[in-house]
Image (cartoon, rainbow, N blue to C red; front, side, top):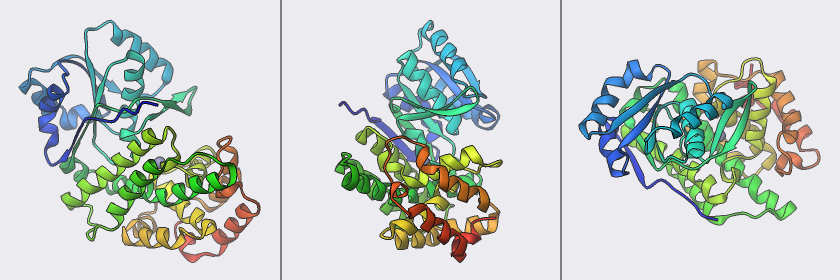
Length: 351
Ligand SMILES: [Zn+2]
């Protein structure tokens, strides 16, 4: 299996203003520009200037308001008729997922500029898109370049940072579940992917300063999420970044009337899963507190609905076929629900 990883990674303050330079370094000359909603008003001038500085020609600009796969497929075919040699996408998760998909259909390389770091999807080989109003995952390539302007990330609303923290902490439980699957079903575990995922998580958790306004921390944090995405490419599956906690979160997305940000949900679900995994419980609990995620959830009102959360756990093992996790084992769901009913910290994160 061939692994394609980005060859250009820039995570620093004011990186957006060098977008033209980075695009040129990748050989991009005529591009299709994808912008998230609101990005043109917020950052348009800087984006256009940076591209103009290096004579990068913008053939088309699309503001992406929907991730409907049929519309994106049509757009991909339309783009093929232009002489573009790359796609550049600036914005949140939706526009980046759309760029991933369109680039894989139109066979154009792409560069992403995430303006929030709310999960590890900006550099992962999976795009989450709408098919008849339901979310579905599509396998894609990774971007050729990732440019993260830490000053932009710093100014984003705090829930995006803490959602990213939750997605990162979930690697404790996902790696455990992957190894558990090996012991029970013989599923192949890629040690290199585990090492990337674990190191990126630990680099963040062990960094002494957890102030989301600290640019050094944000650089490390964004790079950790990026490496977590790359670990999935190395593994050839989502295993190093997604286990029982992700199943619970996907299940919650289907059940809940008001799903929250992905990373907040998996952060809470990771705390729950770790209880039945036992070995990961102290690590997840301590990290939840030390990173400030626990306080954020308790104080900000980003809590999950207890009834819906329990229902999500019951349905979680059905979410993905042939995907062994701690919840595939006998009595673990019952044990977990009992924990949810009794544990004070858990209940502070639920409504
Ligand atoms: Zn995730």
